[in-house]
Length: 95
Image (cartoon, rainbow, N blue to C red):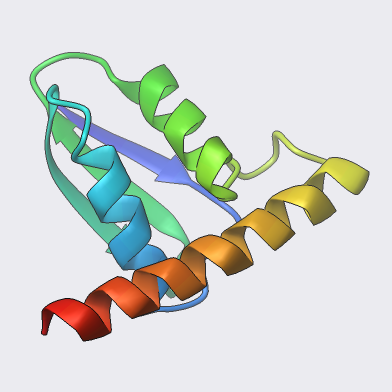
């Protein structure tokens, strides 16, 4: 089953790395593809994991597009900047 989630705040490969790593921690998710340009996350699984994936993404600072407004979006943007930096560090220490 393929689940497509449109999100906010994806900026770079570091963001994509963080998103992929965290989503794959859910054993139901078998593959993740992050499209930075279109700010979409494609998740492969055998079951419906949409809600679980959205919750993980939100916690990382990448809220589903259209679901977070006003001041909450600023909070999530700050969290995503931290996730982005962590993802960049992970990319550079593993490679």
